[in-house]
Figure: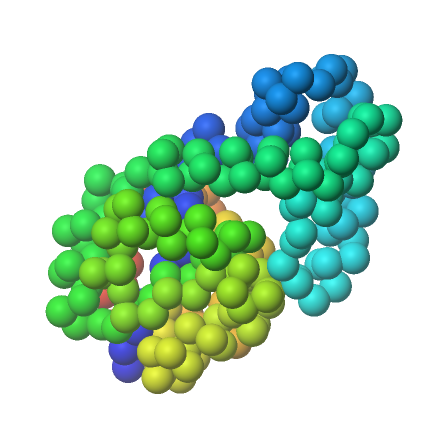
Length: 239
């Protein structure tokens, strides 16, 4: 019996398209650096950032520990030869970037009604990778997300990112359900689907392109184009 549904956040029930990609973040970081009065070639900044991000991921992805973006930016600024207190500059760049998340995050139009309906039958959890807990809470406050969920689990608080089983286990414990009693809904194959599946949680992938092609990646119990199709997919899983 399915008793609980776990939802990914950004890309699933929330959207912030100008912030969510690595390229968008790099552009925002560089733009802030220029606004702070420093000169930095964008191509050099981008190449250095990508190299440092790859190095950091090689270390952190061994167990999917949370990433330190201020340290990443500090190392980038030092590598491009920026003069000044690179630690403080990195902190200011990161702060300004985080300030945009409450401003730009929008709830999917389907989400409010869907979540209210599902709460009548299931316990709901929000399980998200986000590297700053206060900012995540500001977003949730702004959009009144707390009213929909029985549990909210943020990687910055847990210390581990999806697909680590630790973050999913935390959600299950808060909901007081077993893995086989839960379904994970998300838009990222590795983080949301493979991570949840490793614990025996059923999974639903939101991927419009794969759904249109009729492709169901290994690990996903169902694939849908959007939240609009979720209730039908849940009915099919429950049987």
